Image 1 (cartoon, helix red, strand yellow):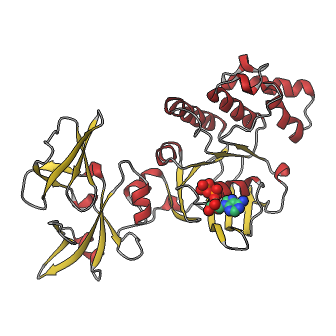
Image 2 (image 1 turned 90 degrees about the vertical axis):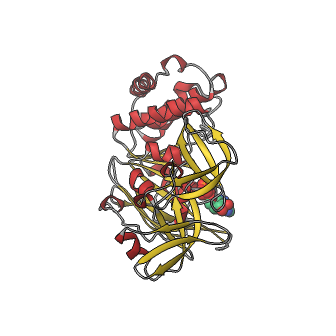
Image 3 (image 1 turned 30 degrees about the vertical axis):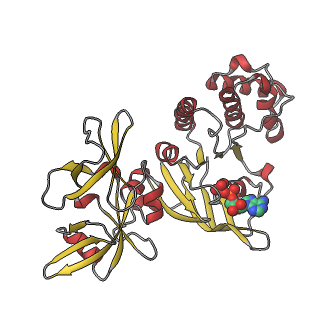
Length: 376
Ligand code: ADP
């Protein structure tokens, strides 16, 4: 087990034309499970490949267990990587695939290697597959073998590069739980890359959100959800996505209101002092409200009158597409069933509002928590 620390880690391609990873700083604690999430092309794989030693950084340093491994060859780093496409040797059996890394990285005898492979195969529930070749296996079985091959080496660090993306939805959920169970049992420091925010949120002790090669926010999943550092994180984490409205701050005597721009009839009075303080000195803002924080209510107070454009039943809930700004969704209980075209009132609590600077998208309410910056 070991800590992993990235300092000003940078990767450029094409003589600096493409900055894939833009001066990243990250500390992963010993035994921690960190998920790294972001849209396609945001630099997730490149970051992971640099930690594995498969890609050379343009600048910056990588420390594993406090040792600078930036210039250490991949084979000499005690890290094991699990890939999306399994990367199994097609001509080797499952047993040979699992034993191969051990042969390279340890001086165990053949019998000792075989014993370890059998133990790990039992742990993964793949003992019956040891004599088979990869093309005789299902996708799920191949990924179990790939995981087993990483586990059998007993590395300091596991690196996962979208390992479940090729599996169907049901199997993906099972394997998520399985990987979490194994990681709890082994307590091996793990960095898990995915483009799927739900996977990142459910699996990570801590979650790192990347965009454009830069870290947008680091925190435990609940903090990142409740207190996004900027508009990008607010919109990326959570499903359906956070609703955004362009608003103007209007102050009149003792009252402060957020008023919807354009044709919107939106107007929300800020009674809460914390919010009034946050918006002071700002004129244009982006207001964020999560669909699950919107409820159908009666008129009065800050209720917004709107038209139901479409009602979308998803079984457990109904998604109401409302005529508030652009594409505004309320996620309500399945027995709340207004008609398409019906005029209704919706409300949301002041405590559930998110406020972002209209220019740079930074949250006006963000308060970094202790856990966002662990000391390693
Ligand atoms: P992600 O894993 O988040 O999808 P990547 O780390 O694969 O993103 O890529 C980050 C950026 O770097 C992308 O713009 C991608 O096109 C670019 N990139 C990655 N590898 C190379 C390469 N070998 N040559 C040039 N550009 C690359």
